Length: 75
Picture 1 (cartoon, rainbow, N blue to C red):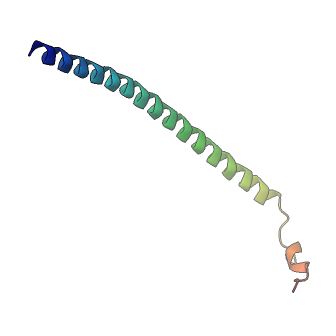
Picture 2 (tube, rainbow, N blue to C red):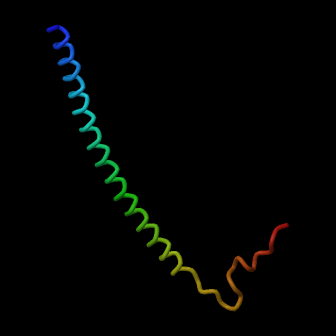
Picture 3 (cartoon, rainbow, N blue to C red):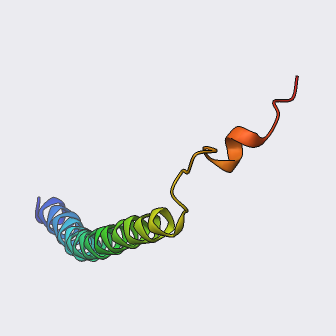
């Protein structure tokens, strides 16, 4: 019976080691996701600013409307 107990102890120890590695991996993945979310938020903010700059650089629609209105449709 002592052999069985040692085998179980070895299995439990192996599982504990795997669990510790998985905990470290999970922490690393969480840090990566948090960093990527910050980057996404920054990129979205930059896109909004670029869009605002683009819109403010566009000429106001005068009496003729926008240049797109002057292009004949293609059928």
